[in-house]
Length: 337
Image 1: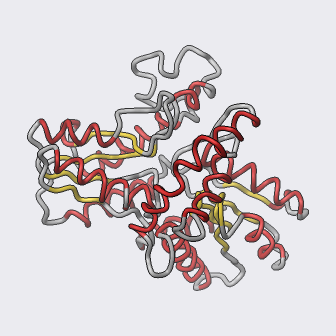
Image 2: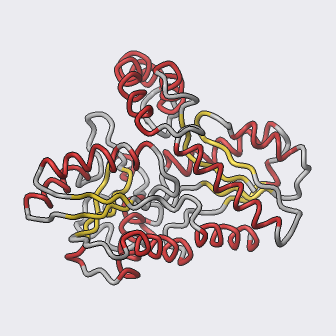
């Protein structure tokens, strides 16, 4: 079993963050422009300006054992492995990062040493996007082919609509806010450039053209990230018994000046505060492990923005991390694969 998450710098220093950003942003799935232009944008325009500021953000969330994403992903993988070992000792579990360490290559090398009959790959992204799920698949296939393992790979698809994921997420939210007075729930997903969505619309007549383009997932938009996010939010809200007025959906973590999916989370939070909403709970269902985007961007910066706009309290719902129901769900998926 190979669990793949996005990645994190090796240390919260400008140098390490710069290396990480270069690897991440030089991926053509992330910045989809010709490589010479991408090199110029990344190495001349973006990284020199962002590495120090981003390093300070990583320093704010750093845990004793490392960055949150690495710590929580490692803990999750270890608990999945332990639970599988309790029912069948044939399973070997490795985890990797698409960018940074441990790399996909190193994880596959360790699995190769076990001479596996099959390698089930689970990219830990609930919703499909070329810049997360697809690039993880492509990189895994490339590295596996180099090692003669390509024919042993089995990929688990995005799980945005799997009942086990929805139920684990909703129950986790309910348990987190039990006994708390919450005026409004916000489901904040990582944003994407709108062009990333449009280029997957083979019809050219649906994405960001029809007002109801994301109201349901159908054949024409089956790989649409926004449509999948909206499905996840609606399903969790229904499980929680929330009506349409009790929750909102927003998107975070924009980069650059291109048009991105909205509304932006901080803008939404300011608007809610202006409407008199005092206490919000924010869940981030595009992340299954807490990271810079949840801990620093939401629990710190977004919280400050909400309070400065007149709100009183913002409660971050932790990601699933190593929630027992989430571990049970993944273990069941592995055993069924």
